[in-house]
Length: 229
Image 1 (cartoon, rainbow, N blue to C red):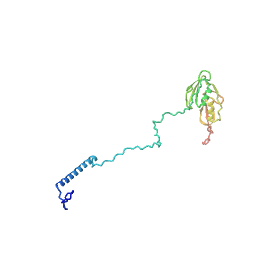
Image 2: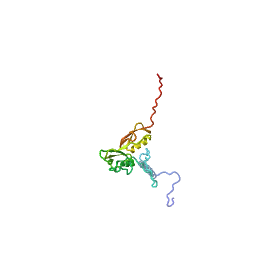
Image 3: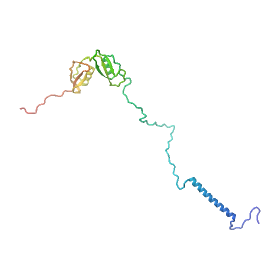
């Protein structure tokens, strides 16, 4: 006897599987096996070779972030960046003055005021004026450069000053101021003990005067150690 709306209940105990139930179980198992195979295949395709571990990515060089508010040091300059050129000691505006037509002594003094050297070349004409210079007037020069002056006439006469007992350096300065030049027979230190030409002699511009400076060595004869005959 059955209750309306529900199938008959079988008696308690072990149920025997029917043909439909067996097909259901077989179909479910086969589906599970297929899903497992497909899942494994898909996983192998996606994962690549499962036997080989994937190497970690190689870290490349990174560039540190630069803060726009942080001042950065300027790159060190190289030899190629530095300006090239030679350093000059020529003072700004130092040039050879215009000396042509002036008396040679005045021209010499102007060169001395500019701390330039001079060399006088006297000619066979007449007069004391400068005819030309080398370097030419207006040429930029360094201090100490010698300027050659060509004088129209011959070297004039000059009196030799008295230099005896003066210091050797002071005597040389006096000779240069007089238009003469010193030569040294001995050293250049100590007082002047002799001079040639002698004081008051007549010389000409550019003539040399020989000086003997320093104390003269003692010439006292020594006693002989040999017995008298």
